[in-house]
Length: 230
Ligand SMILES: [Zn+2]
Ligand SMILES: [Zn+2]
Image (cartoon, rainbow, N blue to C red; front, side, top):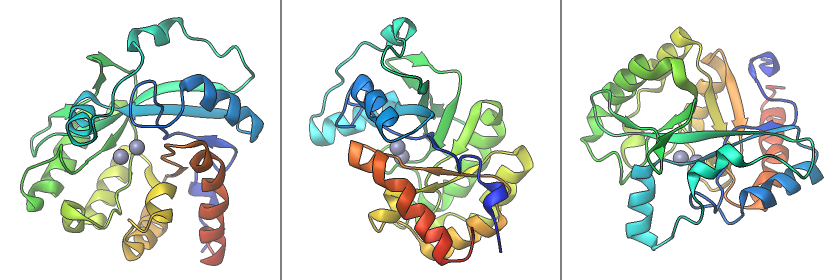
């Protein structure tokens, strides 16, 4: 089964990564952009965490935000020709349609939508209702639904077939998340269902380091090749 045609970014682009400027990555925006050029990328989306997830991370790990978000309006890539986009990795908050899609209270035009433990603290069973309501309400601004195949906590309750039907209806891609795959945080059975049944897919690093940005492609592509998908 060849699914190459369903992958939006088989070229050298990556639409999920974190910086130290605004969330929990190890590198500044400028370091990421310089390195992205060195490894041959042509477009990247820097998708730092939402305010709710950051509040949670600050409490747990005492990390800090380093830059003033408003300054991205004055930021331009002075290093190279990599196209740089700023989105937010928005958080599902509850089983209604509430999400947090701001960084320092500022919205981005588009978001990647995620659920994270610590932020989503409703009953495990309600996660399917939460995805449904959040996507139905916000689908116009959602570029990707991230790491749907995580294998911990409430994610085990995710009805992956129902989620696939929902994103297909709104033509939203699901994500093959390299970081979750590489770090053993992926339900492989569910990942195969996602790859086979979702109409649009992104391969994203969810990189928090330059290593992640560099290595994700090789590993996901190897996984897809080994399984006869590309
Ligand atoms: Zn995430
Ligand atoms: Zn992320």
